[in-house]
Image (tube, rainbow, N blue to C red):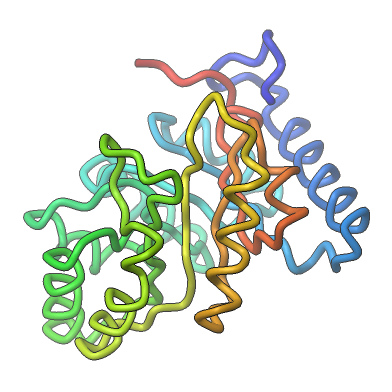
Length: 230
């Protein structure tokens, strides 16, 4: 987790980025995995382009954003400077933002309901831009959270594919105040069941645990950039 003195835009951001990468490599080796099999998504929501640029200069290329509108205000210019950026949408997607999201992002991680799946499939065909998608699984069956219930994933994945979406994997956010390991283990089993190779799970507080259970992508924000401003 982020150290208490790491504030937004802190000059030690790059050092903390290096530390996270080292921890990922260590935990991967500990789990008998190739460190290169775990991809770090730097979660840059609420942080300005000036706060993000140091880690871009250091070599980070995968980033996650929660809101389409916020991402649209800063990432086009950054993508012009760093054309090999891969930008993931990791927050909820509203129907009225689908066109903008398809144009800007490179991966959509939050395909969480039939209406959004249909809207994405239609818009990708319209733009002729077919992005990899992940199905968001509500792994704790929490009523306040978005995502497909685990027992409904079969039909939903099939429907997405029939509409032309390229379902590359699964993502989840486990319940807070519960040990994440059992939820990550269930996600790993689901990914294996559906023969999906991308598994996005684990954030600043639990990414090292997620690596034990096969996470291919971990989404880390505060441990790199510091505490977010409201």
